[in-house]
Image 1 (tube, rainbow, N blue to C red):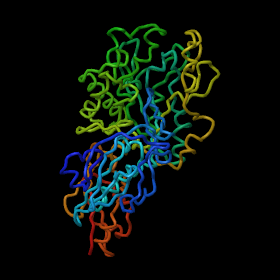
Image 2: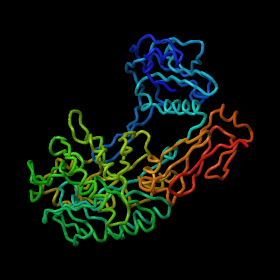
Image 3: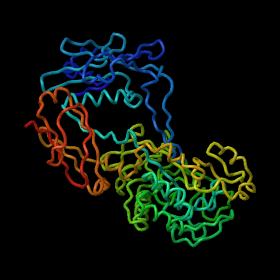
Length: 534
């Protein structure tokens, strides 16, 4: 058993942990205040001995999605000096104390017998989010209690490089966000060929629903006839589609829907609309219309469930029809659009799961739960198809930091600028965008989804089964997977020098170290890991 925080108030639990519970009280941490001092010499704290929390070195960066889908690292850079609640208690002689706050035990382990372990981890309630070292202690506690554990460490060096908005109608009529859709040769020159050269793959978060303001319908962008927009830009979405097809064929693009389907509000007719047919500097210029899964234009209202389900399904179907792939990712809980006291966004995960989605930028999405854990997802960098256009001298052609300048420009200034928007990255003059990230494991949402949705079972002693289903885990149908196997020192001792590890009936290594990486062959269904001692 592993007990956390103040969940030892019940006497029976406290007795099992091996402490005498007194009271929960607030103390000041940081600077000259008390800290959690990890002092125990034990398997659970072997990698953390001597650490004192809070501190700067062990503070985690927490990724918080911005309104435009960009996910910057906003890790805390100063010590946490706030009050926290700690459990006042005393430890019995049957436990080993691994950590204190002042003189108060906060981390203890008790071996009830050879096969039964009890661990209690105190400290602040939010410390697993703030401090990776605390997540490491929890992980080691699991391994110590069970004897072994199987973990996904593939996200640690993972990078999801994302391009948003290809196919979106907005950049053909938006005052502050307009530019030509990228042509096939542009996609090949600035994305496909560099990615091929470096052996990398990126995610194209496309918009497969085109809001046609003349027809007042949502249609496929790839069937829209080429035209010159009001800003003088040539828009050839057919050529864009050919470029996406080429990247998909060469294996350097993964296609997912961006917001959900059209990037547009679910109701474009009701007040304060209609959006259709409005003036270029009227409702067309109001950015709140371009949020799809939360009704930002109407005070962050929820999109009605049936309508949201329709939108998610239409996006998935549009990607399937155009590219022959099944989308598993879309916008589910855009952090910047979840507002306290507002209903918008809080039911999105359930609806997305019904539609068949399994992941979003910051969430695991399933029929069981929607879990936001952005600090444990692969690193993400998001740019836009705007970044594929050549830099110009138009006043509305800004960097991301120049949005304030765009807001101050007149309608005439914005219309006369063929390019308008905030650039994120230079994709034209050099390969630094890929060279600086070449040592990362470039992955997509399909691989991310496969790891998150793997069922890990233990049907018998010394046996672990991985189950890869044919929907969420389809990435593993043709690709191998890697898992980190961690063993406790006691488990290794019990296995002896003849201990072996087998994968799908094939011995792959000896039981010779506390941690090793196992490669699981490609293929869906059940894969079996066994520990053999003869």
